[in-house]
Image (cartoon, rainbow, N blue to C red; front, side):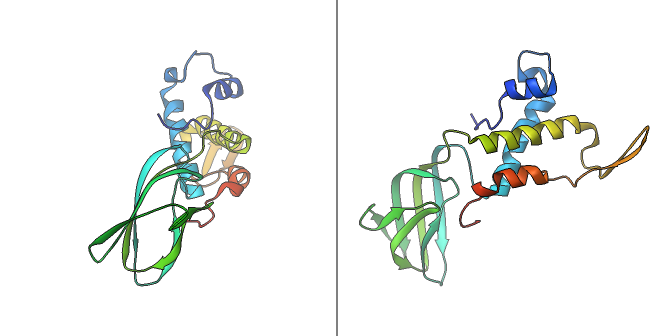
Length: 183
């Protein structure tokens, strides 16, 4: 199951919903996962904590910083480096260290393929992220009839709406969670 940034209980209280579960509101259920994807894209990181495999190709420029999208990294199962057909398994503390952005190799590589099997992501949703997801999901649910509209006519005139994107306040609240390397 994907990570739940905002609970149905929070959405139910804010939107004054009557039904017992989110499945009774298919649009809201869809928007809940859609907002999570939009936030992950904005943050340039994957939030759900689970085991992942990333394959990174390094070109002709030497590098030792290996960015991983699911941070923080909690465990590394393996790091395999292949250069010109020869593969080598790297050991933590001897060949690399876990960092806030992924891993840092103790040597620089070029023209290499690196396969990292690791567990990364968050296990607890920070309050700022939960609030941002709550606001964004509620806004999109209440505006579901005008998705993509920049102007909506009402009985009293017209209302200008932000472009179809995360709200400025949502972005402000999660700014500190952006991947350090910005992938």
